[in-house]
Image 1 (cartoon, rainbow, N blue to C red):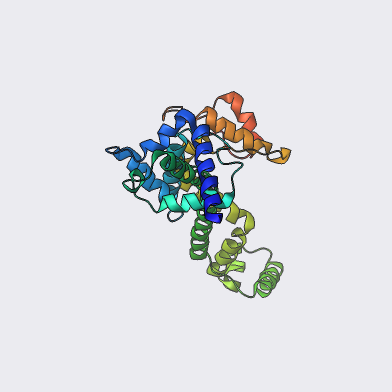
Image 2 (spheres, rainbow, N blue to C red):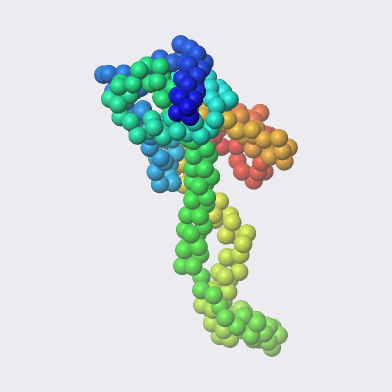
Length: 286
């Protein structure tokens, strides 16, 4: 009786999915159509998890998400269905090859593909957001490590700074008429003074400025590739007015997404919007 009830419910599940898909049902079917190499390639791509955190992985996920969206699955396709049931059909479909999908009847094949594509669409969207956050953190961490190596190579921590400053003050007071080179250099040595200056310059403000410069360099030469397809694929929303400048910047990126490669600056009227984010940053085109 339980098996019969379950079979009956699954038939209802299949019929409801096919009804909601309507003419769109041909999209998932095309993935396993015989001779459709593009469909088979997309199906294989949908089954893969994101690779290591990097620009290539992010762009691959963007293409993957756009591919499944082109199937045109309606929103809320399985909204009133049990998550466990949809997950079971997804798990069943993800193990099947394109040739395996041709064995079941069409009224089973369509829900199988729809469950797989619908679930993967949501999962890829979440994965893309996580990948973006991880990539930004990776870029920042890499920039910090690079700057730390540069600063470490530039200066050596000077010990006993209080004693050195006392000796310098004593020498300056005791020989006020002599030049710095003749009065102070012999007290602690020119190299020690240079190390002190280098250490003083390596404060937090300088460190952050160097990190920002390194970040901009990495972004300008490599990571800027993700800014055109990413806003087109993911929708960003925020109700917090404190982050309104960030949302305005994203809208600006979308506005200039189709600009040719020769465009290097935003229009003068757009600079005020960017100034709300960072007054020290020029209105350079991303």
